[in-house]
Image (tube, rainbow, N blue to C red; front, side, top):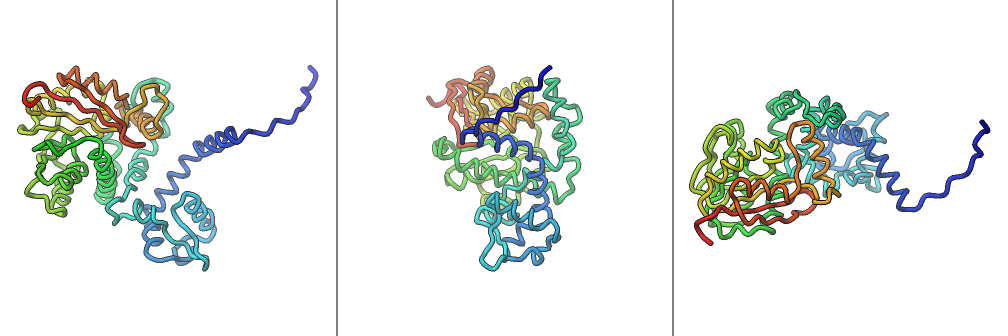
Length: 346
């Protein structure tokens, strides 16, 4: 067989070159995540925020310091001054310093917590079934007390950011009492209470969450308007007397049958004429993205949950007895679907 004659390849268009670089970045994803987790665990972001420093002053090993600092600079997480010292950028100070109220590093710790299971994602994608040993309990099984708190604080900041977008899209001013089902340490509830002085809230979640939730409630001086009730939405009846129920990042953790149970419980608990608000990452109707919801959906492929479209969430709400489903995107991360229980106010 004669050898193929070599022909030079055409120069890539700018669009294809950008796509090639995105593919390289996808393949480097695990390395990027591990580097970020190291910086969080080692306190490097705090040192960068405290004062500019040389690699030596920052406590970095000489052989790896250039690559690590260059990586952080390329991601907009560190910058170098004229004296050759590195310091934190405003984004780092806002989102990666643990004392910041907007700390968003909890997700890095989450994925550290079940790194081995992530390596088995291909099995879950090939079989279409979740991995039996990769459930949420296993995700947190390797966390010590400090790590659990770190993760919870990171998720709290994420919830507060989500609540800021939610209250711009959904008007809570007409509601009296909010029931935040699976509300964790109260990020959504606390932000909504601060925005609406006449609103009161009940956070309903597992007993282990109570200490951090009550600490956050007290810090914001909202003890008179917010309470924590311990329980399981699978095993216990939800507290009564609420005209709006919030499910934030709950349904996508569960298979459809469990979602039906959760929504039936919510329908029973909310007052006639009351509203249910579902907030979480949702896929585009044409499955074109968005990025965060699709990657989050891959996580759910491991754990047994499912990221759904807004229309599918609406269908589940109607199956549970709610009506008038309305939906809207909430920026790049989440979408919202609301519906009403018949009766009460029109």
